[in-house]
Length: 327
View 1 (cartoon, rainbow, N blue to C red):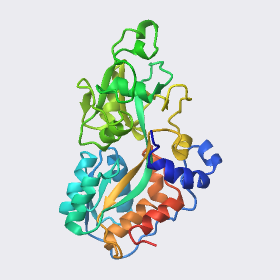
View 2 (tube, rainbow, N blue to C red):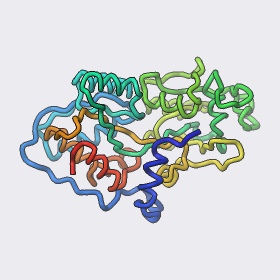
View 3 (cartoon, one colour):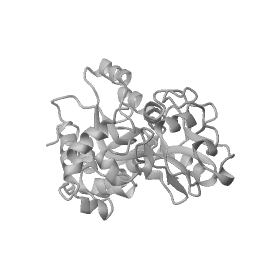
View 4 (cartoon, helix red, strand yellow):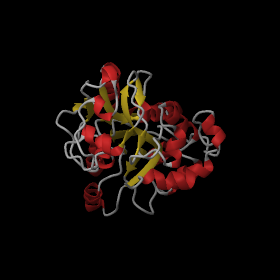
C-alpha cells in the first residue's frame, strides 16, 4: 500500500524542520511561524461547511480570529467532508474543511462552474486512529486484520472473517467475545479515508454501527468494552486506546505518536484540508485573506495543538499561503 500524501510533505519538510527535542517535550509549534497581527478594515461574514473531524478546530480558529475582529461573524457547520464541495460550488460557504482530499469528480464539478480548480490548504496533521476500550489488551493489528474486522469484502487478503477478539490473538475472558464495530457515515471524509486506506477500497460490514460524529465513535469505544472504531487522534480520551498498526504481518507495529505522524511511519497519518475558491493570479478578499493568515500563524497553529492535532512547520505554512496568493 502506498503511503498517503503526509509521507511526501512531512518526510521531506517537517522531519527536517521539527527538532527532535521539541517532539520529546510534547508537540509545539514551529518558532519560525509568523505571529498574527491584525489589520484595519476587516468586517463581514464567513461560513464554513464541511468536515465534522475539523469542527472543533474550525471553532478554535474562529474564536481566535474573532478576538482580533469582534465585529466579524463566522458560522460553522460540520456534517461531513462531502458537504464541502457543493457548498463551495454554490457559494454558500467561503471555506470547506475536509479530512480527505477532494475526489476527482468533486474537483471537476467545481472546475466546470468556475474554470479553475479549488485550492486545498493543508492546515494541520491528523492521525486516523483505530480505537478500542482502555481495558482491551490487544498489542497491535495489521492492515489485513483491520480489513477483515471491518470489511465484508476482505480485499486486504486476510484468509478469514474476524468476528471475535480471540481471532486476533486475545485469550481468556476475551477470546469468545464478539467484536462490536463502530464507524462514521458515508458523508464523512474519515469514512472515505478509512475505506480507501484500511479496507483497500472494499465495503464495510453491515454490522458497523454508523455514528453521527467523530466524538461519538470514541465515546462508543469508551463505554463498550468489546468495541473497536476509527476516528481522528484529536478525539482521543483517557477511556480508549489507539491500537498500534502495521501494513504487513511481520513488520513492527507503529504507535500513533507525533513523531510517527511527522515522519509518515504511522500508516494512517493525513493532512486536514481547508478548501476555498481562489482564482489563480487574483487576490483573496480581505476577510478570507486574514482568516487564512491567522490559520497559518503561530496562534492558529497553537489552536491546532490545543485541539489534539499536529501543527504544520513554517515552510509548509508558507507554501500554503503562496498557493492562495499570500506572500
